Image (cartoon, rainbow, N blue to C red; front, side):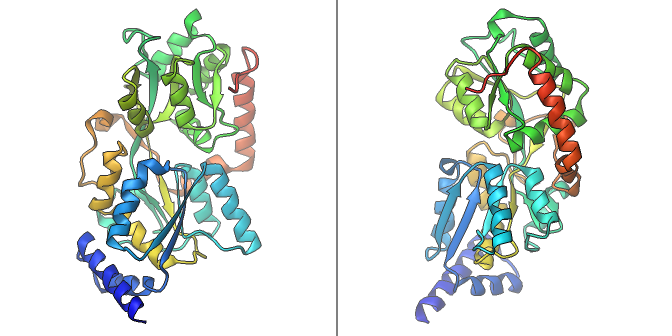
Length: 358
């Protein structure tokens, strides 16, 4: 019992370090004292959040964190499987597949919690206090400076289309993007491109005609360009691109000048989380200025209105198209729409012959 009381005091001390929260939050901290474990399933690379997790444990030293990193689609499928089977659920789901996270909320799998950090967030970053946008990250293009002169590099989606339609032989088989049939985030970003621009599907056709290389993740696309196998990578997450650019100065990052999608890594606390109070504390920490500072340090722009965007990923306000944390994302998960979308994708992406899956 003494250990639990001490743990509760540490939790309350930690809460004070984050924010002078109200009595309701103190009650959550006391309830969390008996849980002592936080199980996180996330699509975010662990090295990017290692400092953040370590800081959270400094605040709450008796908490054991189990952080399981996997792609967004397997996270979603495992959650659905465990909900059906009654197996123990993770405590915290945090992925970049925004539409799949919203689907979990819509299906009744999320716990509702009104975080005291809510007033600092834009309206688009929260749905029903069950799905929370944690970042506001631009979707960018990358290219290899050794293989493509900056003067030829596309500055916009329309520029990329013109470049691909030019039939430049040095680009044939050397453009990389997602296989949207196999990548939850790739499917989401293309669906948002379709809403934002008339060049989305002509661009898919041009990618296919140029023998596009297809991958499942942003990291794989960026690595392919960084290592010189591809010249250009399309629709990748800006934070990963900036991290690789720091390692390899030959990699260049382009924030499209016609419009720039802003994605968010959405957090959901499962309704049947085994340790829901610690999950609430972790959500509050992620949304706090202290937690957000760790994400900004890894080029993941803050979702908060009171924190600056890193200069390397700053875009003019009028060009930003935030993907809202809202039920509007459910449209792209409609079965008939998805079948039509993927049929169009497969027809156009294979227009120039079989696409390459390295």
